[in-house]
Length: 116
Image (tube, rainbow, N blue to C red):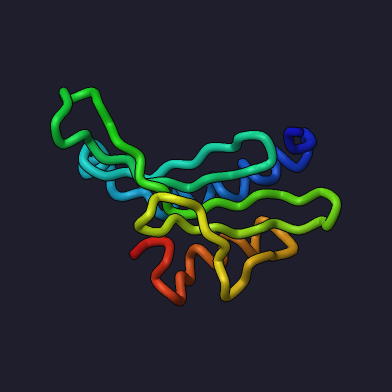
């Protein structure tokens, strides 16, 4: 089930603003950029780089962080991608009450799980 329209708009506003602040200057973006997507009840933040063996238009995405809304509990579950390329619960704070708290955790990155 997808996020309600009002929830999706809030997520896009909050996460979009955060990603916009994290993006590198325009002249660097062809080599490194940051983006996000909302799919169903999840929002994912990722890095974008050119493919090392592809043409100039091919890009690779590297996962940074993911939050999934659990409607029954009214909370966001937080995940980070480990070297095994699987999403794992972010143990210092596996759940937060709002998308703003998720963005604050990713920004702080106290354990260097998200940005490395």
